[in-house]
Length: 306
Image 1 (spheres, rainbow, N blue to C red):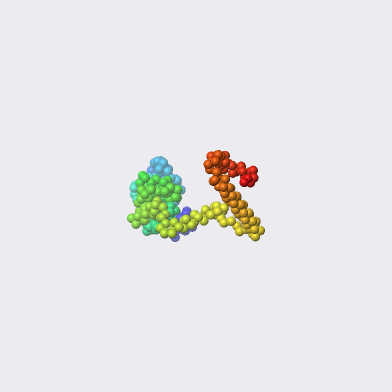
Image 2: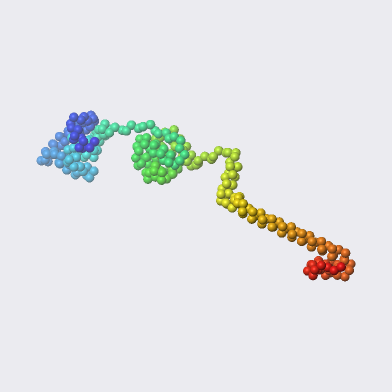
């Protein structure tokens, strides 16, 4: 509660008994300091008490306004520094001042009720791991990074914890176990967190075996090849005019092939007629000029004589 809100609340607002005891003790110490101030020829004002506290050392330096507000029940409780400085200025026991302040602080600021430790569910991604770690941290007795790092040990600093909780660094198994122990997550939450960490490391599971996978893969590859090589596709159907031209070209080619075959057969017959009966005569042997060369030369001169 702010000081302005405390002033608006007025004196009707009740304060805890422990805080009332602390303020009463401080008031009594101020009254007792009047004897010391009178011996010095001064009055026990708040300015006088502030001077006495500051003369004891820098750790006791406090303003007169802070000492005055420590006794005003309309304002928030005094700080530990103000309470100890008040005790030092009035020559009171500082241990008693600390004990009374701690009791008042527990009454004004009771300890936070810790929720049940979070047990993370099943996750398989790094984002799920980061979310689970932050949920476990939210249910820790102390959620500050510095306290968690101190409880986790030397292997996990506050800066490393910040990187892990923001997903900028992937934790090791040892770091994760130390983090869970610092958060007092319990055995069930720690086991679930480490199991999820192992699933993230192992990656997604392999797809189940499918008997027709090979055939489907071959069909898919065949379709991909046909799409990448359009020249393998069937020729387009010709119209009647182009088809007629192609038929005429094929018919002419077949006629030329038949004529060439007939000419070759005629040449073979002529060669047999001129080389067969004249094997013993001069120039009639296979190695003489009357062989195949003569047949070709005779056809070039015209028909043979009788």
